[in-house]
Length: 415
Image 1 (tube, one colour):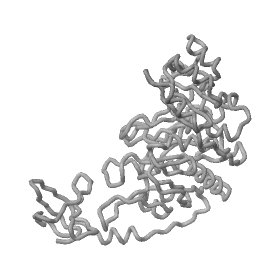
Image 2 (cartoon, helix red, strand yellow):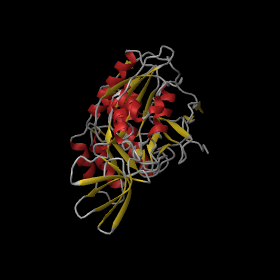
Image 3 (cartoon, helix red, strand yellow):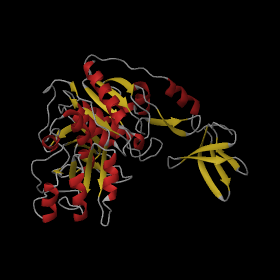
Image 4 (cartoon, rainbow, N blue to C red):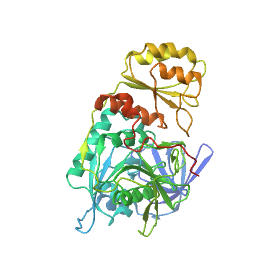
């Protein structure tokens, strides 16, 4: 049997049928199943029947992947593809059958060939980390890289990022950069070797958004479970609300800022539903100083105020996720009064805004010095407080001033 043969493998009362792929070790077989997934099988005690020879030319596929050429077209915009990690630019490594991350511009075009002809591309790697390992230092590196790419003439930026903490990074760049061009975050909920992967549609839609007239930080991900639309979320108003669905991301408190109607034949269109910052409306500027010693603390019933004291011990500021209109247990108020750092109150509710003027507890919190976080998402409020502590002399006023669409003027029904 050879790589590219269709085989049936039986081992430990399990039967696997598919195309044999090259394996990196002699001890294992790698089979691509009919459903699109790869499976590794221990050769020991496995029986293999070749059902059909040479049904797939693996060597040619490898040769095709090793070839790449990016031709510059003066009539096309230039988009910088910046990677921090994640699965969107992943491809199958035929040596191992595994999904591997590939991150320069040529690799991205090999992984997502549909991008060819849409723009001229430059590729840049800022980090190659899992999304949960993102740090404020990488936010700063990313902001500096985006600034350099725009200075060098990029007409738009696409940031490829793992989905779990994408909303934090998008918020960070929203505050760190005054941008004259679109900065579009995108990712993939499902890897490239899965038949339901969302990497192609998300990447193509992100490039469409990056060449649009909306010069804001956006998150571009599936709008629904179908492969027909991507939503464009403002970077400071977006939240990942599902662990695995392709349409995991939602704009909180409003409809998405816009959408991309995806056309597999290359006729995708970008539409916006509300006002946005237009291309070239501001000069490029970088404000990437941040205070990293900021905590986000979620209040729950029975929570001891000593946890607040512990969080404040080495912190320069704290964001509290309170209940309802922005409340914590009244036993916390004395502790809050004693703390000499900014405390910003947000709500655990997904919709609505903080208002600590309705109930006694809220009024006592205001008297204790708590800053109302309006309708900011708790994660966004943390990022903004980190940025504000390093860039403003009046933390309370700046936290309550809308800077990048993070605060909506009114909380009204939008359906």
